[in-house]
Length: 74
Ligand SMILES: [Zn+2]
Image (tube, rainbow, N blue to C red; front, side, top):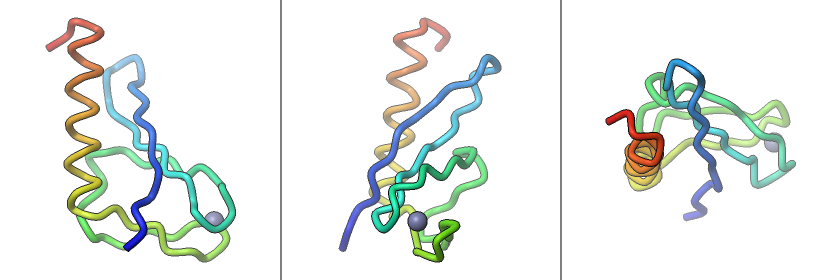
């Protein structure tokens, strides 16, 4: 099972955006973390399935709290 590579962005309201790089075409797909759910299927513009696994979601949420700590807002 391939895990998608992803990055976390916090906007100025500290909403977390997950930036998921498509393994097929490399396009960066941006989704609000709140709107994602584990194993919910997302589709890249090239048609490739880039759904986040449960493990990837947990990693994303961990990354968000680390970022918030770094910004001293938690
Ligand atoms: Zn793609």
